[in-house]
Amino acid sequence: MKNFMAILMAMLFLLGMIVEAQAALITAEDIKNGGISGLFTSSALGGSFALKAMRGSGDAYYKQDVVGIESGEVSGEIDLDGESITITFTKPFILSDLELGLLFKSGNRSDTVNEKAKIVADGIAYYFEVTDSTTANWTGSGSVNNLSPGLNGYNGLWQISNPFGDTPVSKLEFYAVQQGSGGHADSDFGIYQVQGAVVPIPSTILLLGSGLIGAFGLRKIKKEWKRNEKTS
Image 1 (tube, helix red, strand yellow):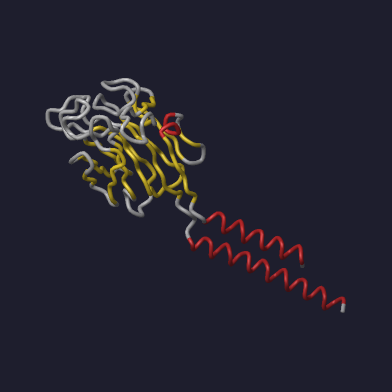
Image 2 (cartoon, rainbow, N blue to C red):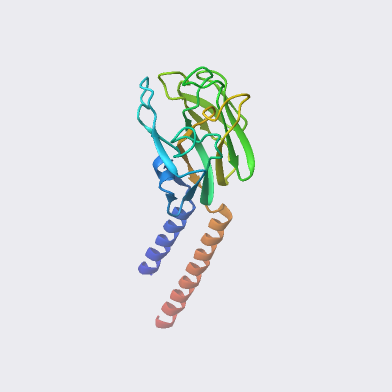
């Protein structure tokens, strides 16, 4: 009986571990390396992946990397030369944080427009557009927080919290967006990091699993009781 109870407790513990959300941080380097086994894969269109160190020395993000495309108008960023990056998740993924770098206000870093990015989540397009040095519009859910101003000497780094709400996504695509008369070097940007969690197993499955374990345990207890009754 003691061995059975130990096994039962271990099974319940493992079942609980399975249903917990599996939090993950995806860095620019992870994307450049093609993904993380069991979590996501990444692919580049218009060239190969390249890291780019942010050079604005005005804040703590100086020399930290974003990932973009090696070729094109600006190496290490996603620009308008037919470039894009795709992230495909192995299992549905709920984003808690999406951070994009090198998106500047018009008149900074030689940009002639307020820079704009397009993120396509499972076929639905969302847009991020700088409106001032520390403000931007996002057409999805959540909120925008500026981490580094979109000004000369800084890194134009932006955080979108809960960008798609509680909706899990399977694929993300990142594109630059043509803005008015802006050239190919306008609206270019890089991906700094992505955070979120793999969607856990639904609670109904947990209940089913617990029920099966309980039924197994009840049968085991009955067998033990009958065995003891015969020997008494």
